[in-house]
Image (cartoon, each protein chain N blue to C red):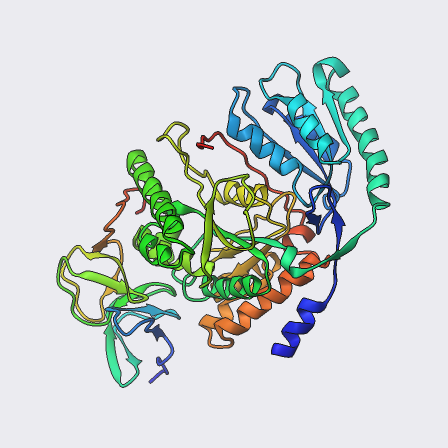
Length: 96
Length: 399
């Protein structure tokens, strides 16, 4: 089994997401501390993965601070991005 | 590490003294076109010289704009500028006599070419080249004096941000800012439109409740402005790089300000009143008159330079090759994959933090040390590659 221990970074204990610090292939179990997280989709460096199940409308925390809210229910290990979260400030329509 | 820091701080920076008490770490001639119609002639004059000696700047618009006038006055009398050649078509609205007298009063050689009077393209180019040849020889004789780290003004921006910017490059740039402030230098961070969501944590760092209110007002203005425009300061590259919202981008960008107290909020071309850390408010007052607040990274860098920045640090995740006219730009690459592809354009590899090969403090120290070396004359990758980007657009600020 490949060493995935350095693929996901927890920035703050309060966070409900982890940041990919390497590229992760779909359906890989990634070790985070004593835990193991099922990463479902291909995930590139810099992208976010749900640390636990997140309900729709729940605040997404990164650096221990709000970066927006979940626009849909998000499962543990799922990619957290523009398809399932939105800004609490200015929304945008210019990205695909 | 402490010993090394002391040595770095004690090493002499030799700089050109200016009449206003500031000192320049470069002594460039700037050629400034005062309307787009004079741009090509000004550009052709510059191309006859080494791009490290002669830098092209200018304002394209013909309609008058107070902001562009005082921006050009601040840029032409900036610390790194030794002499100024103004290139006017002749009928534009720019107040060229006022600009020339401001430059003259600053003690710098200045010459104005008016193309309609000189008699067209070739005669104007010849006159400009001759003036620069003479002036370059004069500038080379100007003596330098020692300059302390505390006399430096350093700006910071980030551009082409991605999910790595906020965890490697920006915190490292922030560490360098903290060290500079400790050394008594002046630091400026900016782009209030990319600090949306950080206003309250930022206000907690204000030196006074009044400055705290100014910080919140500046970010609220930016938020309202972008709402009115209908688009935020968020790009396709930001999303491809893993950023999902403006506040996520903001929190990453905010890290480059470090952790020092915020002494005040300034506007473009305004010089910080004292030492320490300042926020540059870049979004126009009075609502959306002139469109997008900053049309690209270069316009942000130029505003930092107009507010007196000797050097600018530029953190990028997706990768940029842009630097700027007048002041050296130190490019800090946050993303190790980008660094591997674009290393010739990068000065610092903060991607080593992501790869687990260096700490934020180590890379931050490297940025601090490099700022000192660049002030001592070491060329950045942007300078070596001849990147003298410049943009100036219409804006309005209450003053």
